[in-house]
Amino acid sequence: MGSRGRVVGFVGSKGGVGKTTCAVHFAALAATVAPRVTLLDADPNEGSSAWIAEAAPAVHVERVRSSDQLLRAVPLLAAACDLLVVDGPGNDSDATRSCLLRVDLAVLCSGVSLLDLSALRDAIDALETVRDIRAGAPDAVILPSRFGQTRVAADALASMRGVGLLVVSPVPTRAVIADSPGQRRLAWDLDSAAAEPLRTTCSEILNHGKQTTPQHRRRPRRP
Image (cartoon, rainbow, N blue to C red; front, side):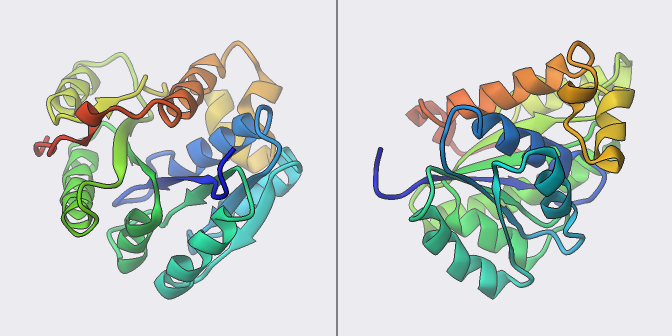
């Protein structure tokens, strides 16, 4: 174990794409294998910090309310934990760029509508700007959420896969996943079978963080 924990940030250029849901479940899953996991709630809604405090109390919680606070907090918190999970703001803002400036792995969360794909393009543009500054960092993956068995969703997924970044398994639209924030529970504690796709996606991200390869740092294309 190194002296600094790995930093994984969940970001999105619009709300309603499952960013906080995935960040909370990822942190909770990580806490089952790592002794010191911290979730940093950088979303103005502060939904993840209140939720995870009840759903996974083993995860330490911190909050920031500005991009400057985020930039200062991440290195300090990472030095005191094994994994720092950042729930970034769900919009195209200075705080989103600040998150990208500090994380080791950026999880770009996106739905499958045309508006979602447009927001994903904005997130990729921000990622490329930060990569120019940080000489190629951070690593990044795309997380498709609210996925259904429709032609629109299939076309959106194909577009994401053409970007040049790793696309993890889509998180489908499931009632148990949508209901979990309101119940302050983890989806797989409510219905393990129905929430298994979400667990699979979180596991993929956790494992990817352990085996980053140069091919995932290629310049992405716009979807």
